[in-house]
Every structure is written in C-alpha cells, then in structure tokens.
Length: 165
Image (cartoon, rainbow, N blue to C red; front, top):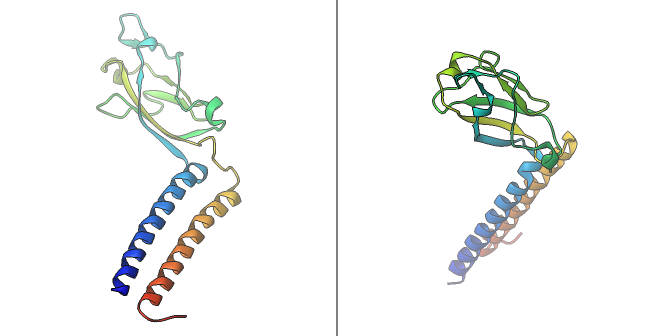
C-alpha cells in the first residue's frame, strides 16, 4: 500500500514538474528565440492604380510587428502570398528587412490576384535577449531546472523501492 501511494505521489509531482517546465519554456522562448507571425492577413487595394489591375510600385506596406512595441529590428524569413501561391522576391515584391516594410512590383502575379495577401515573417519579441551569452544562460537555467526535477524524482523512486542513498 505504501509503495502505491509513493508511485501516485511521484506521478503527481512529475505532472506538476512538467507543467512547471512547459510554463518556464513558454516564458523563456520569446527571450531566446525569434518569434513568428504566420499568414498575417493584409489588403493591397491601396496600392492598386488605374483600372484596379496595376500596382503602384512606390506604395509601402509595413508588417504588424511594430517596432514601437517590440523595440527590435530587423525581421527575417519574409514571405508573402495571395492565398494560393507564394510571391517571388524581386519579381513580385521588394522587402526591407531592417524596416519591416515591403513594396509590390507591378507583375502578373498581382494583376491576376485579388486584394488579399498573407504575410509571414520572424521578428524579435520586446523581451528578446540580444546578448548571446544571456540567451545561453537563460537556456541553461531551464536545463538545470529539468535536471534538478529529474534527480529529485529518481531519488524519490529509489526511496519508495527500498534503496536509500
């Protein structure tokens, strides 16, 4: 009976520890990894000229990551599509990764599509740690927390089954 109580307690502690690690990972990821914006919807109708088919190549669009909120630049891994196919950089659009802006090129890609676009890119969150040493330390904290929890659980299981060290 005592062993089954110990096993149940170990299972509960394991679930709590895993919940703690998942929450800690969720807090640390924006600080140590680039964040993603996937399929952010946009409307290009303001860049249309003449009969609504051609594109004004000087009209500038900005991604929604908002430098004033995140306080970080640049963006990376930028892509844009019209819901069916990806646009080609330089042929269909030009992107400024430093500013987070892009302009469309007057190409058949845009002439043959509606005004809906989907933009995807990666950016640094406002809590992103610029210093690589700081990011490494943050990752080590999580790793050591996992090791401490694992060592505690192993010691507990060994104690339940009669071995004490």
